[in-house]
Amino acid sequence: MCGCGTLKELDVTTAEIKSMRTAKAYRGKGIASQMLEHIIQTAKRRSYKWLYLETEALPEFLPARALHIKYGFEYCGPIDQYIAQWARYEQCCLLCT
Image (cartoon, rainbow, N blue to C red; front, top):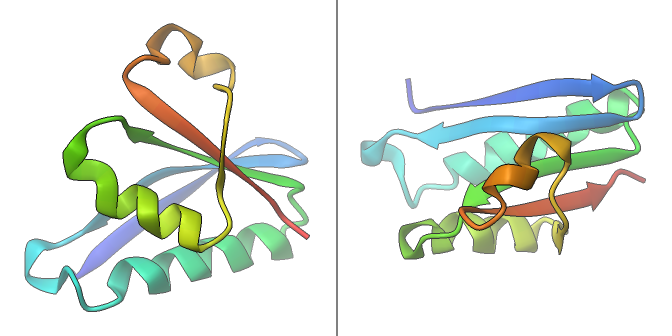
C-alpha cells in the first residue's frame, strides 16, 4: 500500500479528514496530493459545507501543512474535540463549494 486517508462525517454539513499517511517509499511522488484531491471531491459529492483536518504543530509536519494550504485549507480555531489539545495541533478548514 502506498498511502491511505480517512474521511469522517461529523454532522450532515461537516466532515473531518482523520488520517492521511504515505508510505516512506512513496513520499515525494504525489500520492498525498492524489489522496487529498480524492477526499475533497468525496466531501463535495456528499455535499459537506466544511471539511476540517488537524496536523501536529511540529516541524516535521511542515510538508503536510504546506500541502493543506496548497489545496485551499486555511487555519481556523479548533473544533470541539480538539479544544483541550489546541497547543499541540493546528486546525485547518476548507469551505467546500
